Amino acid sequence: MKIKLIPVTIMTALGVCSAFWIINSVNKIIEKEDNSLSAESLMDIVPAAETTPLETEPEIAEAEVRVLKKAAEPEKATKDDIFYMMLNSIDYYDKVSGRFVHKSARSEYYDEVIFQTCLSETNAFSVYRGYYADEDTDEEKISVGTVESEQENAQYCDGNSFISVFPKSKTWENISAEIVPLTKVIHVADQNRTFIKDGIQGYSCEINPNNVILSSLCLFPQEYAFGYLLDQSLWEISEITDYQGRTSYVINGNTTPEYGAQMKVATFEFIVDANTGVLMRYDGYNENGELCDFMHTDNIKFEEESEPVEVLPDGILDEYTEQKPNYYLVE
Image 1 (tube, rainbow, N blue to C red):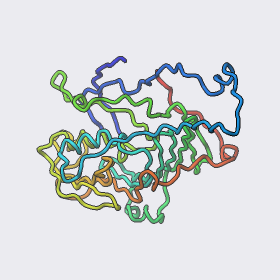
Image 2: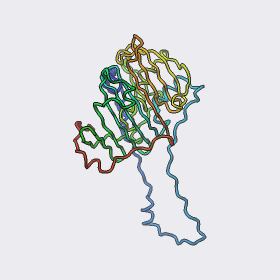
Image 3: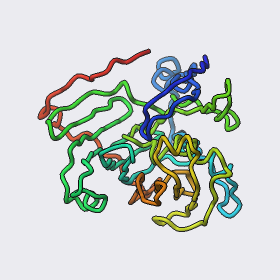
Image 4: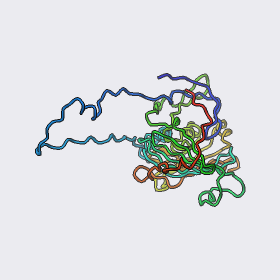
């Protein structure tokens, strides 16, 4: 594995993050040589034994179950526990569904995302809608569906194909090159997630395997954790509460001058799921104490309680026109 440090200035879902280092190693695929033989190939070279009524049936091997990390007990959790759980949230859940609405202080649009994902199966479905933020649009109207979206698309990932459908233009796009399975994630040790190089703060971000639009705002909130929680002197765990039926941490804090200026946020509040590190709610306030930046979830459900992943409707691609991607894949 080659690891390369690159100084970058990038535009992310949360805004412009400049003058930092990031490790460019998280997009490599881990490949393991498999010398095992399939059941079909074994039948070709091993004669089948004669069976008698007295013989027992062979045991059927159970599918491998993904083992999830266990979070610290909420009453005993430290700031480090919460910080690193948010940076590694994908290790604490496998299936999740729900919805969130996001509004950035740097954007003229509201973002609404409805999602279902199963990490171990690389299956995901999400709907994105963008709403222009004028005087007739607010979060409540978006939630009840009384305003018209400016943009809308749905994405269906089944592990082999990734299709993006645009109902307004009746078009579809094949984005299968963007599929991110769990095997593509290279985990970075906690002690290596942040570092200083040439006097510049560096962060090691892992690739996101949710295959859900804007899921870094909620399901894998690495950038929020780096931006708001790295300096632990600026925030406190205010309480442990029940939020959407989930035990959660309420965190209140102030921003650093640099990150606060980028986000246009002076103070913030997080509600973090205590079992997974998923960000359930974020509110950012400007210097006047006005809400200017937020991400609010609802109907979040995990594991067996989560909604099943929707699949691409039969025949929809025959009704829509294919459009070619407007980007080039760089190796």
